[in-house]
Length: 351
Image (cartoon, rainbow, N blue to C red; front, side):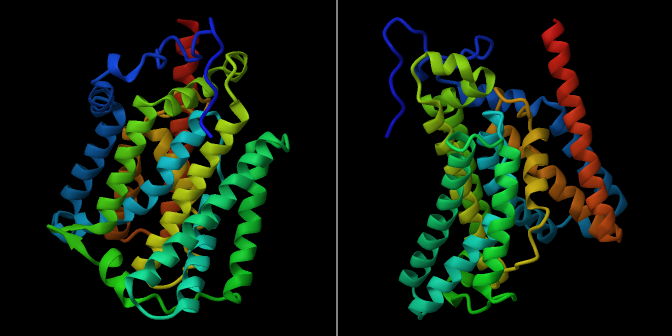
């Protein structure tokens, strides 16, 4: 059900600085303007410096079409969940469960495909539907726990993170499942269109849709308004709780989609392979310019942000660093970008 219309005489709630209440017709270049600002941001400079650094250190390995595709495919998996995380963080929430929901959805999708049997498109579509529904249900649960249950998003999604992980292991019998249909692996997993992998195209389509929704629709304006001043939005006769549930449901659906893509890529459920996906998604979102305090969100910035940890991880592998140092770098980067975000907000409030 759509959000309720604002009461007569009440201004559509939105932060004045961003003026998101303007109808789309008055902001025809919103996405282009957002892209322009993102390209001038420091995150693009950081990405360029990393690419230049690794290219100089290992030009024969880093600068290659194969490596570029590898980075793009890795980043696309994180981008799917990072788009949903962008909406969640914009409402001043958090979703720590995306990695475990990804795994759970992959397990459910594969079990459905195995139960149906065969390798045809209908079997793959059934698995996709099951994965999306599984992610949706976890997202709805997260939203209901934070709204109806009155639990903080941090605790609610931490609880569902543990629950989804445990249930995934129960359904899979404690070990990775195999038997992904060849049709799925050969198309979504390894197929490409004009040299661009299908997984990358899918992620870009999702990101483009997310950018449009955030900047050009009422759903996006309400998302930013709730993050800026939730109480003002409630006074404008908007069903805030319903909108928050929808945002968490969106995050869950995209985690389910990412789980299905993971099945296609690795042809297994990878039960232990997504412990840091939540960290990667949050890092990408914050690096891209979305504020952890809420009210400011940019999906196009997330596209840039998701490339930075992917390039960093790939560069570390090429340089031969131990995997543990990759986690140290990601954790340090997350703390650094949060500090920058907090200082920027304090400076803006003083100004």
